[in-house]
Image (cartoon, rainbow over the protein chains, first blue to last red):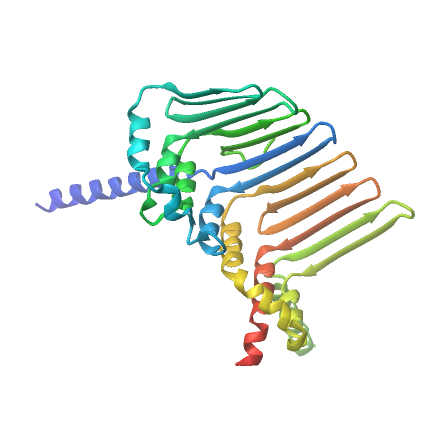
Length: 192
Length: 147
């Protein structure tokens, strides 16, 4: 009986030390950054802003000004009137990858599509100052943003949280004759 | 002779302990190199703890307006400072044009601002804890006088 107790004790000790070693060997949660890069080839300027998403997540709920309050943006009931946003999102999510909207105008082409779990918007301006806008938003982020629409609010904190859980993603690019703007998320602490 | 040695040891120990306390919040480093029209070099290395202490001696009435303007932003500032202390080092802002390069980064426990252009180079490093303590003092200034 005493020997059995000793064996169980040694086994428990070994299990505890192995668990401890495994826990210490586990990598800490990787910080993710929202990068904004603006390059102006004509002026020879570039601006990079890198914001850790953990900071944004903690900071936004503290800002209460205008339509921003407690990490939510009020868009008002009027904007949602008669639209079941959750139903709409569910329909988009369950639909196969496809191009939903195509608008061709004399000076502009607009495409809205779903591809690989992302909502994609392309805008091509063909006249005047040629400008291309590409927006790629993972549907998880859109879901998080509209997760609390009953009060006519967009949940920014939930969207940022979803963004930090999502993989590396190029969210927005805007290209015109001289300027190039990129907004993306990855785990690198600088934009290089 | 032994007594003198003990006194010297006591004084030295006290000075070292005091120095340790004063430097415990890190150092503020300012390095300015001007190249044109003349070469000037200014280098200041000061204990960060002195800044909130110095802020304590500013007449309260002179801080009233600053405190009122600062107070609404304190929850945001507190959250930012707390998160900045915890997160890894990163470059917050990097601006380059043809003749100037400005970089603001979090490095260790400090916020570091570097400005480089043809005429001068400026480097300022301030511990985040010192920034936080100083802003807390400034924001509290008016409430102390009114209470």
